[in-house]
Length: 217
Image 1 (spheres, helix red, strand yellow):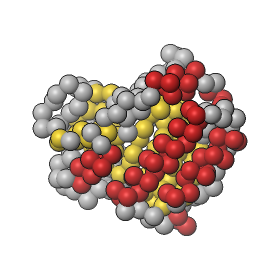
Image 2: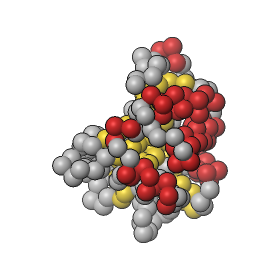
Image 3: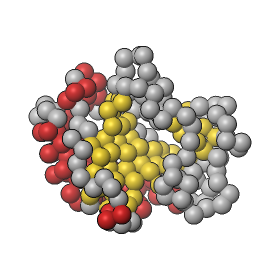
Image 4: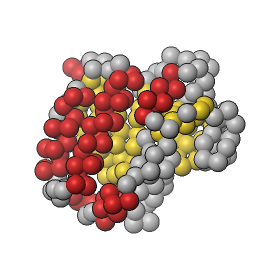
């Protein structure tokens, strides 16, 4: 694992590159605005999810404890008609593993979990999320795009997170000053026919103050 200090290949200044999930803890290091777990999806799984009817991809917006994510994902898969089999199990297991990993890194007992099926230009403007931290993993389609901007304008150089590779991002509520200037966005895909499946995890301090603590089927 290394904290990138200069622009190299597929990362930017202040982005940690993790070779193992445990290495994502680099996000706590001073000056590290984001961390990417560099991993490749299994070819069989990727082929399966890329060909799946978008209507059968699981969708959710829910707040729950990390240890209940696996059972919740089973319900989501059944509710949306995601075909049973090894590939579905791989997806459900991975989402549950991401939840456990992220909750541990952020010491959070509750998480907001979103599974978004995207075929438009959602969040195409570069921005920083109004959260403490966020994990994003694109299971299908083009990954999250990011870059450095010192003036708030669109970054001059844009990087794309590989499909299947989780990126851990600091938000505006992360207690560090000055801010890094790392911005991100969803890739503009409207009109291309592409459909993305994106997992988003946020830490939640008090679920009673959150409006979306039930499944959105």
